[in-house]
Amino acid sequence: MAAAGYRRGLVDLSKGQISREIFVNDEIYAQEQERLFARAWLFVGHESQIPNPGDFFVSCMGEESVILCRDRTGQIHVFLNSCRHRGMKVCRYDEGNTPVFTCPYHGWSYGTDGKLVGVPYFREAYHSKLDRSQWGLVKVAQLTNYKGAIWASWDPAAPSFAEYLGDFAHYLNQTFDGWDGSDGGTEILGGIQKWRVPCNWKFPAENFSGDSYHNISHRSVDIVGVGPSGSGRRDMPELNLAQKLHIAVPDRGHQTTAYLLPQAASLPPAYQHSSVVSDYFRECEAARHRQRGDWGRLITLVGEVFPSMAFLARQPRTIAVWHPRGPHETEIWRWFLVDKAAPQEVKDFLRDYYIRYSGPAGMTEQDDMENWNYAHAASRGVIARRFAYNYEQGKGTEIEHYEHEGLRLPGVVVDLTQAKSSEHNLRNLYRRWAQFMEADSWDDLMAQPHPAGVPQAAE
Image (tube, rainbow, N blue to C red; front, side, top):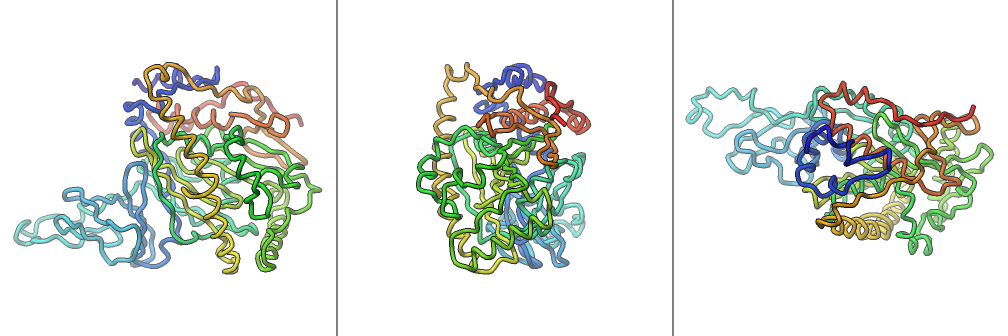
């Protein structure tokens, strides 16, 4: 598949059509590993998972196993989990604490700073001439700690993470900041969930980019009202007053769904639980509005950081990463976030709610997995692959420089208040996907033209 062919037939955004080939084709999948996952910034883990020197957490970047660890001096590193001698994993545990990583195959050992510190028969077999300084663990090219979240890229030419996010930082911050608006005030609650789904990784990626059309899938969840306030997710009275928006940053490939409350709206009701829980969230909501001003009116919901990290910024506040495991399988990892400063009773309350709502046994996740599973399987056949998917919803309704009661939102916006549903965010995901698949350099990627035909908001 020639790199230049992605926007000439496979991803046709002028028609709102995308070929099924990009989901089921082995050659395209192999190119993704090189052109997307070897170049983009990827979420690895959270600093709260490795609080002490020697702590480690084994994560993934695309198909690569990596070690997130804190060395003896407290510095955070991300290494390829592969011995430089014959490639064996040097760490086969999910998490823990260690002074060294020792390969179980031939015994080479590495410090938590990645340096090769032990070589069996160094004097006898290598005649003391092996240059150990050249054979440490492979480090990621770039690493950043963003509000406690650890991100990394294999590409030394990639822009900084701040440049990679662009204007999308305004929306991602609601996930990693405290509920009261405090900067980076979150931590991971317990361990993480992992499970596999027989579908291409782009199915969950597009779903969490803002698929506002699949409400029928979660109808049973909405009816029983599993939200922490005691109501269904989509029938909260205060949200009926809000502008529901799709927001995308076209030159970056990130997108989210959000509610924007009017200035006169009252604060959302505190969760119906003990006084400790309800008081905590009521006080946090008031504090966030005081600290953030008009930005406190924005309620970010679900979103996607290109290519494969998703978040839910409202409860359940979670992070998900779609790890590709071949063109026909995805391994999903999910982290759960809580405020570091929250009382233990609040954390316990949220743990119970998260278990009930999200994950492989959660009420909504099972709906989604069944959809992705069967949609992928039904798209693999010779006949099925001849027919494109339709992504036409909301074409031509995008607004740049959207403003509401004095708050101007960065990015390109579709107002869903009347339209109810749009595939604008999904098109933005695949626009960036095609750009990555075609571009040979970051100069090309960062100089992508703004999509034509986007109107300006009325002043």
